[in-house]
Image 1 (cartoon, rainbow, N blue to C red):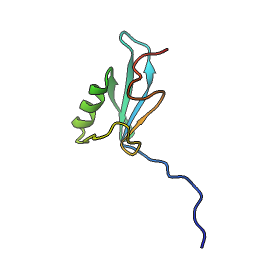
Image 2 (image 1 turned 180 degrees about the vertical axis):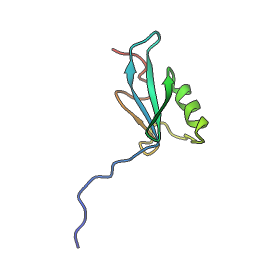
Image 3 (image 1 turned 120 degrees about the vertical axis):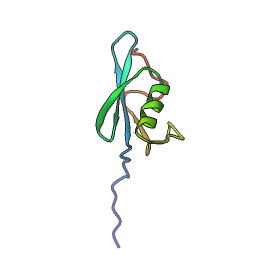
Image 4 (image 1 turned 90 degrees about the vertical axis):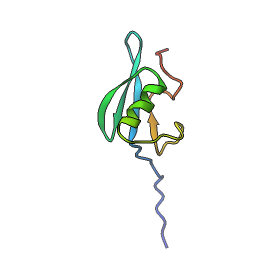
Length: 78
């Protein structure tokens, strides 16, 4: 019997992309592969998810949200 050696890679419905320059800085939010808006805080991410009927119980769950270029605490460029 042969098992696949490929790792499991989550394809979450929500992607929060890296911080973009702006006043204030923002992150682009994608849901189901479509850009749905900008987020300046984690609350904005939760509101976008709710608008698409997605309940987020754990922002650290990679099956739910993928944070690109930082995590839920990254809202400015260093």
